[in-house]
Image (tube, rainbow, N blue to C red):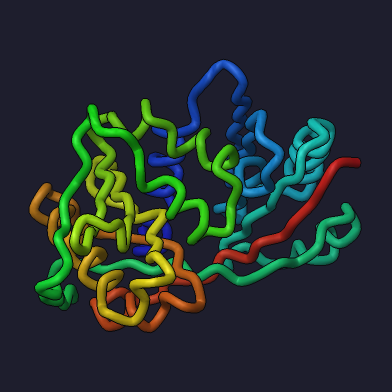
Length: 251
């Protein structure tokens, strides 16, 4: 199994940990999984096509099921899955972006020191999730659209670490680390506009990676924005592949 396949399996494992609830529908077939939440946010609904064994018939059927929900959705394709563009066009989907999938291993990790003004810590299970407004702003997402995955219940679970960085008591940066069996995934890394370009996001990411390796992870992965790509490269992350993201809506 190559590294990208391993990370894709970890991605699916973490997804199964998070996507639970009475109003959530999921279905997994060879090479593809589908998911519907009750939230009107494309990132919370759709398909993840991770293997070449996913057939056009499977994908078409699952897209129809998701589309029938009346919710916006995405279809994410690993770059190793090719030849589907025309089919997705024909289903009325629109290509949105290539989303880099990055990973770092212990021997490649280049930690950075925490700036003296920044105090990093993890939130305890009983603390309010006061970082969520910053997450929503940083990701450009409505708060409600994040609550399915980043609910207080999920963030209180043993596999989840919610990190904050504060400067003189003000929230400057935040991020979350989700631990699988042998991997950790980093999500929702966001910096307040007033604290950008001070190395705070790099310091927070470095702390999360170091903690993940100390906890037994063999690899840490994340999906990078264009803005964060060079930051993560400097810490030792390398791009494994792109996820091709397509966007769809109700029929």
